[in-house]
Length: 86
Image (cartoon, rainbow, N blue to C red; front, top):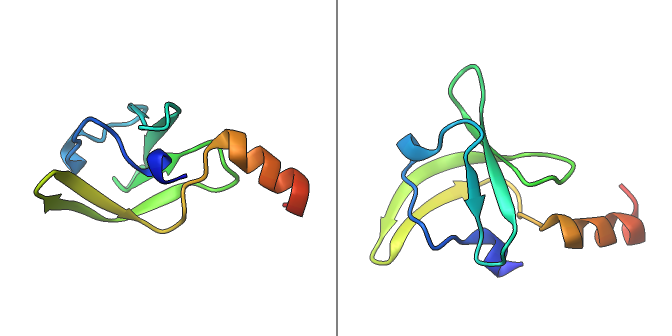
């Protein structure tokens, strides 16, 4: 799950455009969705989107964007829903 939270490519918030697909280190893609008010969300294919609540925290090895949920890859999410229900 940790590799699903990181990418080899650095994206500042200005580069997070609507429908941009980010390939994670885990190999699956996350799609950026921009709302009509300009807010950025991450569509992971899970039951709810992840909202970017703090963007562009620069680190020595890249940039961090804080989201409000744990990102779960769709392959694992399907198993969780099947086991625990919605």
